[in-house]
Structure formats: C-alpha cells, structure tokens
Length: 470
Image (cartoon, rainbow, N blue to C red; front, side):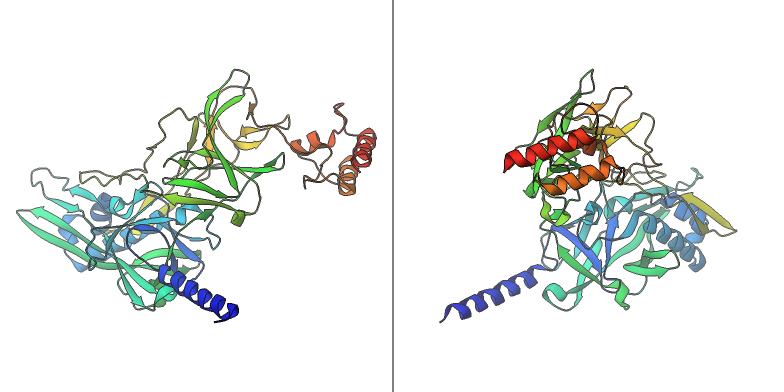
C-alpha cells in the first residue's frame, strides 16, 4: 500500500471519528446551535423566572390556573421570563463563555434523555424549581415545580449533522385537599425571529426547523485579548468552570493584595495548573488573535442548586469559588439590560423588570487597562454596567493600580512588532506630527531617549539604535 493511500485512509478515519464526536454523548460541555438560525447559540444569561408572578398575576391565581385562558396567560408570562433567562448569542468563534453549557445527564441509563443544563452560575433545574403558596393561609394550598429536567432526543441525521429537540415538561404538583398535577405541557426550545432580533422561546410544537438544534462538544474555547503591553496581550476572565491554559494563553494571575502605593501583588498559576472553578483571573497571551488563545474547560461548573422552598424569586447566580486563597478580583456572570417586560393578566397588563447587571460604582470598580503613567494595571470603569465574565477590582483609594509586569518591548520597537527598523521611524514621525494619537503605552515606547518628551531627538536616538543593531 503506497504512502499516499495510507494518508488518505487515515484522513478518512479521522474525519469519521470527528463526526462521531460532534453530537451529544452523555455528560459534558457542549454548545447548542440552532438549525435554522445557524449563528445562534443558547446562552444562560439570567435567573429571574418567578412562579409567583406567573401564577398570581398572569394566570390570575390558583382559581384560574386550571382553565385554558389562565394557562395561556401563565405560559405567555413564563415564555417572557425564559427569554430573559436564556438569550441567543451569535458566537461562531466560541469566545463568549455564556454559550458553553454543561449538560449533566440525570442518570447513566442509556434510555434516559433527561439533562440539567448548567452555565453561568445557574441551571435549567434551578430556574424551574420553586413553590408558590396561596396568599390566604387559611386554605394553605400550594403548587410545587421540581425535577423539571430538559429532555433531549435526536431528531434526525448522524454525526456532525445530528439534529436534536429539547423540551421541558412544564408541570407542577398542586397540593390542595388532594394532590394533583397542573400541566402546561411539553415546551420545546425554539429560536424565533422578531422585529427586535432573534429570541429564545418555549413552544408547543417541535415540527419547525427552529426547534431543532446542533449539539457541539466543547474541547476548548477562545479568549479575545483586550490590552497590549510590552509585546504581550492581556484580558480578564470569570467563568464558573475550571480550565487549563492552552496554546497562546501563557499565564493566569489572581490579585492577592493592593499595596499603599497602588502596586498590585499577584499570584501566578503554574503553566500546567488548572485554574479552579469560579476564579476571576488575569490572562496573559502571546497573540492578539482569539483563535490562537485557547482554554480547556474541565470538571463540573459551580452553580446555585435548586431549592424547593417558597420563594418569590429564583435563586441568584452562584458566587462560590473553588479558589481558597485571597483573590481581590471579582466578577459577575450576567450583564442584562432587557428593561421592563409587559405581560397580560386576567384584567389588564402587568410588568416585571428583567434588568440584572452590576453598576461600575459603589464602590468604584477598576478594569484592566493602561494607566496614565503608561503601565499595565487597572483603570476606573466607565459606562453603566460591568461586563459579564470579566474581572475587576473594587478600590476606594487614589493611587494608580499597577501590575508588577515589566514592559519587555525592545527599545525603539514603537509599533511593537518585535523588530526595530524603519517602520518604527515612520510610526514615531506620525506621533510627533500628531497624525496619530498615541496611547499611554505608545508614549512610553516613543520616548526613546527617556528624557520625558517626544520630539526630533527621539528620532535621532531611534536611528542610532537601528544603525548599531546592523
């Protein structure tokens, strides 16, 4: 058998193996991509589902829950809550951690298709668990929602082309004189197109393509650096699962202390170490290309476990961490500003607030960036909300927050391409003539002779460096 034929057979075998892997295969990390809107991925993005509102306000209370009209209003309200709790995200490059879902099989029985979908510190089981009591304690009836797993079954295709349906059996146990079941039916995960974009919904039918999903195993996800400093690239990350560094992600740090002068003390994870679940970190990358910078998720994510108790609101996202030492970095899994959501009631309309985000003040929050002195550190956050899955520092002092990371850029490497040549002279001239606005990091690089000014003398010093290096 010739070499070319051997390579061809190996390639075909590898392709077949990959196709077999590209489907749901028990407990693990996956991404759910819609079959009709093929750029849309499911993202667990909130945890607001409120059965008290669904039953008392939308359905009109227990007395109306058994009637068709009450059920329809309850379903419509529940759908709106699900749309705020589960977003659809365009994330073809696998950069957004919220699209990484841990599907945990209910049991190991091969014929069991029930899964709890876990992500962003919460889970489907958490969202759909709760007990609502009648406001009149004399009668003490209650309805309990529990054990509402997602049923996932293959619909068609094979390998990478396998399509799945996913539904929740939306039913509760009504305890009033005798115990009975109140069912709102099986509700299938769907991707619907609206005037305001594509939204997640739960529908009665699974016949349309928008109720079918590709389920893609996650072996790694990509990191998009935010800040360049000294020829390296930096960002922060906060995810509920453990991960290992891979490819262009070279280092991970936590911040252990802030000194009086603002200098930050850090602890670095070893290159082959696993960063514990729920640990906000600073990442150092060798590339600014996301696909070069990869992390490998592992273990079971941290999440708020379902509580089968009377509560007006669903449990909030987990703030737990498996990192046991001091870490001043903080983060949040959500940054939603969906606004006021309106739903129908038996008499008129009512609303609930779907906003769930962290403000950058009280106390002031600082995010990674280049400080005024041109150092890598943390700068005061701006805007109205902190981003999801990023880390920040809360700080009430006035000193610059500077990381103990040296600028290792070559002297005179103004465009930071790893070389010192005529291209750096062109960039320096552009800065001097104000054709470009330098960043604080650029200013430090442009002051080649280190006299505190950027002028023609820096061009002379740069030329000397180039001539002496040849």
